[in-house]
Amino acid sequence: WRVTSPVQTGADKLVIDQVVSQLQQAKLKQVIEEKPDALALAKYGLAPPQFVVTAEALVGERGESRTFKVEGGIENTFDGTVYLRREGDEQVWSAEGGVRWALQKSTFDLREKTVLGIDEAKTTRLEVKTKNNEYALERDALAGWRLVRPFQAAADQATLTGAFGALNEQSALSFPADT
Image (cartoon, rainbow, N blue to C red; front, top):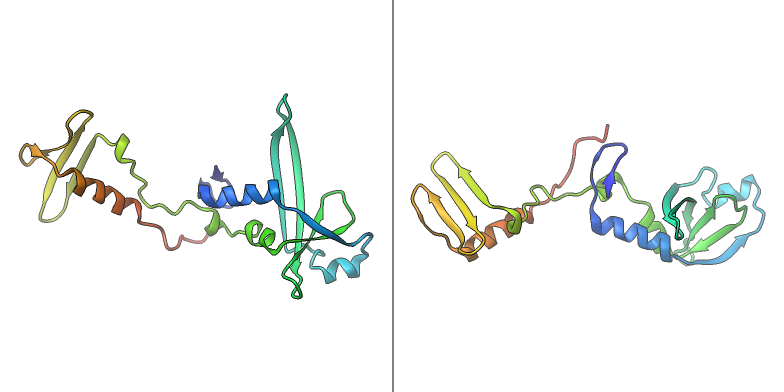
């Protein structure tokens, strides 16, 4: 998955999985109003909608493209449900509040926040240069990590695994404005 607008960047797989799961499994609870007029739509936060989600999927054996669109309104403060309308359907429905929480994501929520994302298993060489230190390591499929500069020696595998883990735990706290 990739975020394509307003910026082009990687997407957070876990967040996207939540959104897709809601689109696939969310249940509409009940019809709130069969044929709402403009005032009713405004009352439910659907004129204009608070959020609009358009999903495209390949369905069926032939992989035909299908588009699904849902408009979200405000939260019902009585029971925490959210008002929804499906494209082409006049009815206003209620759905569990988690639907709104999952679908009403910001670009920041959707973006991959891993700063480095280094996969130790795919890394074969690591060079580090600082003001006071410089070294290089290489990974051999059989022997594991070895220090190759400034001298040759076996490397501490546990320390390197911890270092890769620490690097991969670093997450972006913010991004420049999405323009």
